[in-house]
Image 1 (tube, one colour):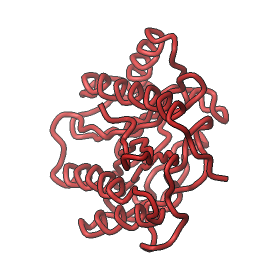
Image 2: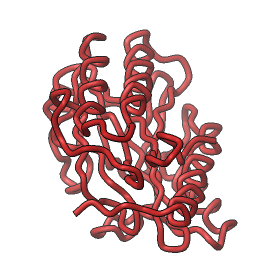
Image 3: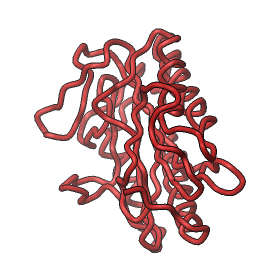
Image 4: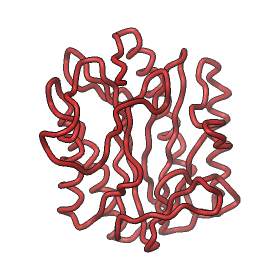
Amino acid sequence: MIVLKNAEEIGKMRSASRFAMEVLVALKKYVKADVRTSDLEAACEEMLRARSDMLAAFKGYNGFPFCLCVSVNDEVVHGMPSDRMLADGDIVSLDFGAIYKGFYGDAAVTYPVGKVSEDSQRLMKATRESLYKGIEEVREGARLHDVSHAIQTHVEAEGFSVVRDFVGHGIGRRLHEEPQIPNFGTRGTGVRLRKGMVLAIEPMINAGGSDIVIRENGWTAATRDGKVSAHFEHTVALTEKGAEILSAL
């Protein structure tokens, strides 16, 4: 069931979503060679401690032990912070969610570490652009898969592939609500978009093939062919004024 949100509820989600993005922006300065991915987690926890009104959305979610997902290079999503050192030329996707007064916000970005290859730059650019292509389709009466189709066609035109095993999602009092939002689909299909819907739109795009594998930790998804992957995400509400990116700063 899709749960529609009122203005007050969207306001709480705006607070959670903006904080999530504030954390991701603040973490950018830590994304450099010879920094451990666990150092990013520590910095994230420090920012949470400074905001007693915010809770971490991911820590403890179905047993996930961290506040932050840190996915490096071929890791698509759900990378776990560890003693792994970032290296020049890596790309690293950071995914973070927050809870404010019982409502969730979710966001993700992909950063380069030092000087990265031209192909990695193209991948990150196409993935970020596809997110906004999808958001442009969020309007009253449109179909959900209009969003999906816009993302898919943009990245495939750039020569990249869409991950099909993981999707975006509705969000509200729970981190994952209906509807699921695939990053591929046929225009004119899917549920009709209505005022009060809040969507976590998150293209996960691979430089190579779309197939993924799950690592031994049971969480981290990585590309089967070992090529790099990028991930961007915004939480978006459909209001009387149209689409509002709640996680925009």
